[in-house]
Length: 106
Image (cartoon, rainbow, N blue to C red):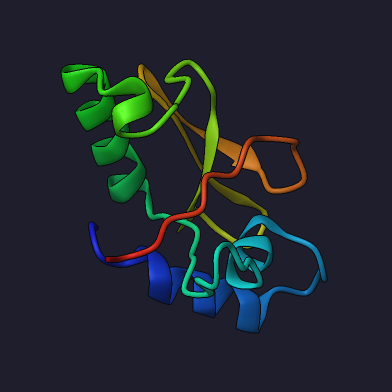
């Protein structure tokens, strides 16, 4: 659901058996003094893609290639998580190389 990405990220970081993962990268991210980044939930990522696609803000909003697949913090199980692209949602093994788009609430 929208609003669950931050807690999902915390849960993944606290429970992951491997050191490097998409959630940890977002959790440890610091950009321009902001350290409250998280890996978005499936619903959060779909909303951003839909908003960006429908309104085509481009550089005025966010420079986002909607054809790119992005990890979400919505897990299927310990081995798989949801990956979202503008036209499709897929379950992927967590070690597959996919883009990461950190979120923060503001």
